[in-house]
Image 1 (cartoon, rainbow, N blue to C red):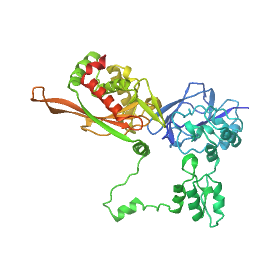
Image 2: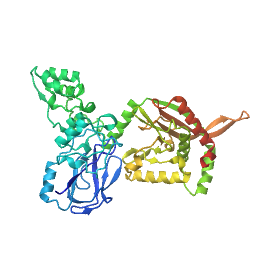
Image 3: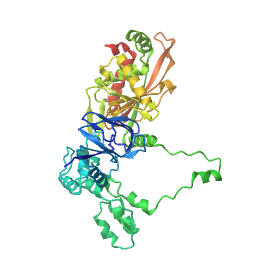
Image 4: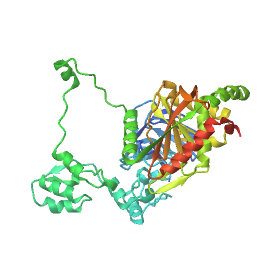
Length: 473
């Protein structure tokens, strides 16, 4: 029997809900081998190159390049061996049923879109071969109902797929049904819903069979039912509002990228207990050393490049700050991978200078220039963005004296850099002199890093900046 495999929109990162085919590298009828480039897929902030993980033929391409964004799990193409007939391909497409997913998979659990050995089970009954964590009952149900588990985001511990995850994927989309019978109390008892949601549904004659829960593991919450009881009234057309009052402001909804940025920043600010440590450092010696060092190294390293180096060395000396926070676990790292905040046409992005503590200043300058160029061209890939143990956000070049940055999860801290300014100071002989000082603010996740640990890190960073010869040791 011919082996037919689906090629679906992948899940890269927790915030990803859709993607766009930028370019197909294969055409219908082309044979490809493992390692060949299949296509480029664009998400909100990155462009990923997708490689084949097996030998096959591109029998049908369903989504053209440059088209509309497709949701995660959407069928993009069908790959098979040459023996498959057109009728078998048509039947495969007609029978294909992607799993319903509400959010994208965690990056640690994400799977390559070109690994459809798992997804092929969605169109043919039989045993599902997978290395993803899944409960035995969930696996039995998925095999019995022919469910594509590669598109399911496990809600159990460490991303484990539970029985309820499979039940939610099987559940068909339905409209809510309103009834007036007291029998609803008994009817609704069999649904995965909170007690309050059941009471509100019974009071208002709502059948829970037509509601898809948005709570943990698909649980129907009070808000899900309340939304049907008190729907938000439709807004007046904008054109009509302007006709009544031409002085109204122009209203533009968030675009897709701004929505993602807004959601991530809101979640970080609400869920991470921030506290802030502020310090100013003298940078006169660093500025003087930079001129000489750049000539010797034949590079154009910026002050920010020197700050990346100093921060990386300070993080290695203070491993309690060089961390990521994952639930109730702290992940410590032997090297400092510094995320640098970059403004790009696709919004704020944070590409990573990896193992910056091991790099020379000229190497850091070359790497940051490469990442900034890729960001401004909209060509950052997942490998440029995934990870990072600490972030630096620098607005000094824009004249900002001081600001507080929001932590970039799962990292534990971020350094905000203001502008350098000349300030009067008292000299050793009681006179008045001037020196150039730089304002730094460290935003810290208090769940993972104590004030003393953050202060010690800043003390080391201050010493490295004010005695910059140590950056070249």
